[in-house]
Amino acid sequence: MNLLQPRPIGAALPDDDPCCRPATPLIPERLGSRRRRIWELGAHAHCPVIGVCLPLPVVRRLADKVLGGQALATDYELHCGVNSDCRQRNPMAEAVQKELDRRYLLTVRQSLKLKTTEALAGWWQQQRQGDSVPGALWATLTHSRCDALLEERVLQDIHLLQHQAGAANRADLARLDSLLDENRVLANELARVQERCTRQAREQAQKLERAQSELMLARAALVGRDTLVACLREDLATLEASIPDLRGHQALSEQLARQLERIQNLERALLRTQQILEMERLRQTQTEPPDGQPPRVEPQDAPGPQAPAAGEALGERAVLCVGGRPASVPAYRRLIEEVGARFMHHDGGEQDHIARLDSTLAAADLVICQTGCISHDAYWRVKDHCKRTGKRCVFVDKPSAASLRRALVILKPVKG
Image (cartoon, rainbow, N blue to C red; front, side):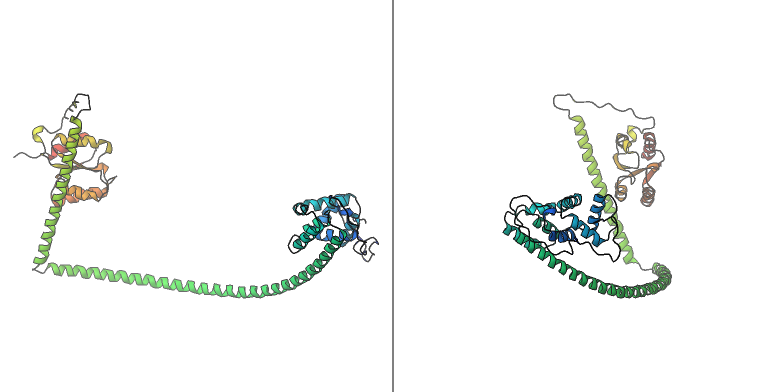
């Protein structure tokens, strides 16, 4: 059959069309272990094998490849022509054989484990219930143990399955039409719901805008009430201050002042004790030589030109140095301890917590504030504390040892 030329409409099918011919006699039972080829099957087996095991696009691709052109025949003519060519060995039959073996390789390998016709028949009954019917059909018909009776039974099962598949397709088409109608109804309902949701969202946005306007008015009224309450509280404080008898308040204030002073004295004593212990530890570390070595004598640094004399020592007073470079802290300690004072330090909020500055200021007797190395918060805390308590405080612009010496000269006690 020439597949490269289309068949005229109304023309009769060829006499050798295998789909229109009656079934050929059953093939005799074969012995041996070699699988049968497609041209060795009965003529009545080609139609279900080609129709079930190979999709029409694959059949058309094979025909184009073998014939060296584009097949112009219809799908039915193409199906009949390939069935006719597969009755004997030729390039088309070999191409179909190769494609079927490649497509169903795993199923064919699985069937090769079956050694008897009964086992092959049982395996086919299991496979026909699943989704791998095309592969099982090809593997069963080409199996070496597939006799004529089993082949006829397999073809009968395939014939019934095709009828069932057609009925299922018609039922699916009817259900698809029903689902399409239902989908149209649901789409219309969805459009109405979306329109209603859009309208409700627009209404909610308008309500939200009105609520925000009312909220702004309420906040303005609240600010006005807060201002009025503040004015009333100020008037109340003025009236309370004008009351002559405030002994109870004064007693509480005096008690609070005494408690604060007691806390400051305790913190000062605690820091003094900690510094004494630290100085004793350093002195023991410097005086105790390592095993087997003579004691090491530390050279005395020459005092600077502006350093206070020994007779002008600060007398174990606690001198707090606020700020300064971290690398210069040992030099600050040495200069302050040379004049007999106890050294205290706070870096002004760089690493030390700023909240510790208040307790450190309370424990100090004298304060040296290096304004170029501290934060604004620390600067105002130092200035406010010294102004309230009357402590002597020297503000230094440059964080250097010379500036610290000059500050110590300013802080030295005045002789009577």
